[in-house]
Length: 436
Image (cartoon, rainbow, N blue to C red; front, side):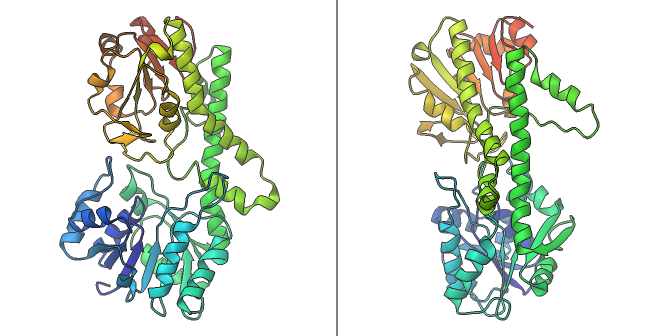
């Protein structure tokens, strides 16, 4: 096992933990990424991801120092690899269609340098039909090899989440779609060493649908919770109390509403499923996307109403957006709901952004000291449930702010306690007014 050589293409939130884990299991790993700064950081044994990632930094440093893993920007390093894992970004276009440019570029690099007999595994999330329609055709064209006869192909879509990268990759079940029986067997031989979870073999198209469907399912569930939150606001009820009571009924699992859905997966993967199944004319999934995409703008509506009740306007106010990433304790800003909020507040007298893990977002420098960010502010909009925010008391907020107006997009604070402290308070799914 210690002599088996593998490659990982794309060293981001998926490729780095996969590479480090493979190396920790005895594989000789070369990682390929076009970002030279990232390559240099990894080769210095430094984790280039921002945010809390338990165990990953130590694992990466250990395998790099032992010479079991190295990073490069050249595909020439993959020529002797028995298995190649593809972990590149697969975004969508402005028209909500798959943008396979990075995937196809990676496939061209692989095809021109892969050895005969190699196994190629795509972990990137892709629209149904992409494995045979894009991946297989590109690899065959660039390599001159024949799928099935000269190389094997599998799709094992990732199931990671920032803040839980190693935990997810080592404990979650994995779906392995293969071109043929041998492709599945070879992929299973590797993944069985990486995770304690079960491995579920299937065909390529089914694996593609499963990955996009599991994220579309969650997106639809969140959209339902958000719609209930909007209804609750209008009817004078607390959506979080509604959720608690709904979930006392068996077979109910209402999700948590909030200020929007971000990250690399949920805003994108439903559209990949819709694209792959366009002939079925999907209706529910696009509607759910529209609901979730509207939530940051609902937060802005809450902010305007809250400022008006305090006798202020956006143009005369110092506004601070608390939280820039899409997820608590993470530095990942991909599709962050904070972006449209920040971009819409350019008319403010002064706009500040705070986040402990992010340096810059949407053209704004990010402050690191929460008290300095809040000092003298007229409105604080909490977009992320960072643990430091939950430690803030209403009394502290009132003391720091010039005009104590707070909009809560993540149910961080108690409505009653905020209003008892004399703070003008609005929240997604919460009761408006002066008392409750």
